[in-house]
Amino acid sequence: MLNILPDTLTKIHIKNNSKFISLKLPSSIGRFKNLTSIYLNNCVSEIPSEISELKNLVFLALEKNTELTSIPDEVINLPKLLFINLKGCQNLKLSKFFLDHSVQFMPDMWKGNAMV
Image (cartoon, rainbow, N blue to C red; front, top):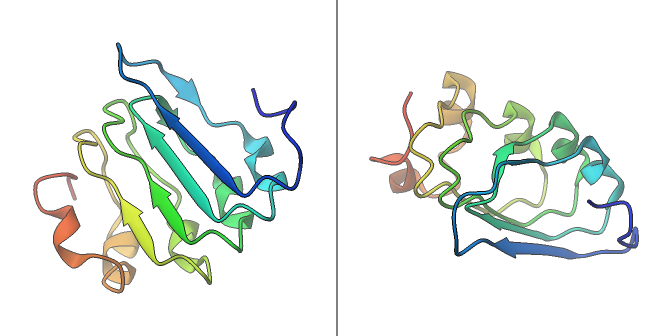
């Protein structure tokens, strides 16, 4: 899926308006070192740990991904990350580490959207 895209990519925005498409974000996501924004709406079921290699990532939105059950804890350590949106990810279970270290983002975003 991502092999045809240039390494210099800065944004990935995919919004699925029809039935849920279950995609596993490939580990090759880590090669896009210039990515600043990822928006995946109703289309992904798995986020690889290689997302933690995206040191320029500022914006991460994973809205309405009902099959998503976890995201790597390492996401919290991304130095430029300012925003995470997990709205509508009702099957997402966040680790205690993730919750304890995510206060800098949007503390109210977890209410009703993810299980601890």
